Amino acid sequence: MTISEIQNTALNNECVNTSSSLDNLTNIIDIAMKNQHFSMVYQPLFSMQNSKLIGFEALIRCRSPQFGCISPDKFIPHAEESGQIVELGGWIFQQVLLDLKRFLQYGLKDIVVSINVSAVQIANTDIFNQIMTLVNKLKIPTRCIKLELTETALIQNPKVIAKVFNAFQKEGIQIWVDDFGTGFASLSLLREFKVNGLKIDKSFVDGIVTCNDDFTLCSAIVAMAQRLGMHIVAEGIEDEEQLQILNQLGCDTAQGYLLGRPASFEDNLQRWR
Image (cartoon, rainbow, N blue to C red; front, side):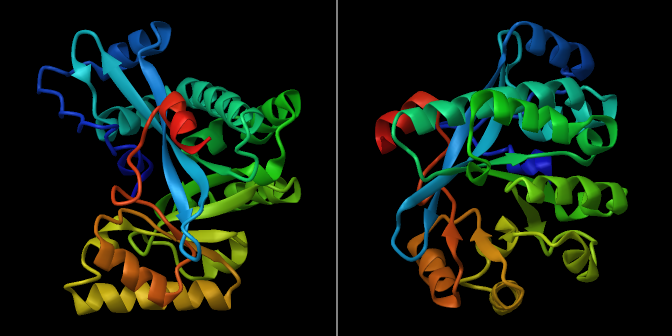
């Protein structure tokens, strides 16, 4: 999935796509940032080996008093195009790391939180210092943080992205490639970026039970990741048969509605503390 598709998982009810009258997203995003209409939710991640909670993926939501729940697949791409993702991304980093600090304080000490980043943020901000300043201020162990960038985004200024990612990895922050198999990045980029893990796109997981091609592709991705020493996550798991097959293939981590829907910090704390 792209960064926008990643964010497009509903909390307990699906966000309804906004109508065609929603034609001035720039102003709507500005108003949402000024009036705190954005919020973060967290979808749990589980170990395939022992079903233990190992962390969360941070996902953004926008609920406008005027337009209701605005789908992330609308406002995220627009924010990237308009440049508003820089300010919005800064807010996301701050909120997620504050919530991670609280998770750790309340006893969830072994978790890792995944944060989606945009190629636009890397190109237009000092994202390394931005995140590391918050990490040091909040005294968060870097082992508790993963940054995810889509496969397609890797090919946008790869030398700059590789330099930034190497800096994060030296500090102990993991780097993951999302939507693996759906973009246009070559396999050689995996060697160049030295990523820590891959996420199998939901589109392949959807067909893993009924489509031989999807099963073969998932098998190949898992086998390749294992040989390269990479961790592998399957996202979008919605039924037990998908979970069983992915477990048999050797996938490390599971994510999806079958296991847990995105929920607020408070709801996750109450459930998993």
